[in-house]
Length: 100
Length: 172
Image (cartoon, rainbow over all chains, first blue to last red; front, side, top):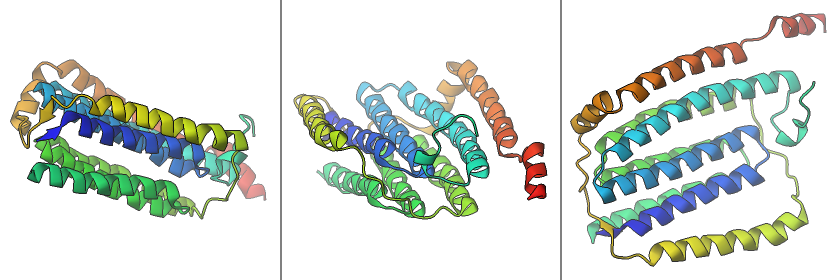
């Protein structure tokens, strides 16, 4: 028996790590990985609540979150490749102009 | 008791991987620690009885998405990130603020000890999920297929080298 709150704390820690990485990292790919970490933290709380309320729809929503994350990863990495092609840097500090 | 031990071990692995992701300077090291986090999370899902979600986590997240990440890191030849000092205000206000909010949220959550989750209690059999997915959630499921199609086309359009860039590259 594990209290539901432990799962929620774990998911909160993962989400907080994701937010921290998003804010302190300078590499655009690592920032993107931090976003994935946040999505994973949210998924864990979805599954924990699904187990707590005995509702399977929580797991179905995790499935949808994963689909959206996969689509997001494909489009986001394509954008990163496009940014790297035009600016030849992955440092987010140097990507500060909309215009080339 | 066994459930608690397994939860703690894999929870610690999870948090260690997440912290390592923040500490590593090279993106490939961060990507590999993210794989560790996702693998440990799959075990946590199994502990909750969510077999289907655990399998999809390993296949989609630890498999497909992370392969995409590693592929892009190698394609772009990403090196170590340059060190930049953040603003001092961010360190002075942000760090204590973050710790305070973390303690507050954890304290608030741990107050409620009555509700707990038993090992493998959720009937997360893939057949039940399929029943739900293809009856109650049929429309969202079909919409996600359109979303994935759009994502594929968007990725191709964005990653394809535009004609004008090719021209300027040739001139150099």
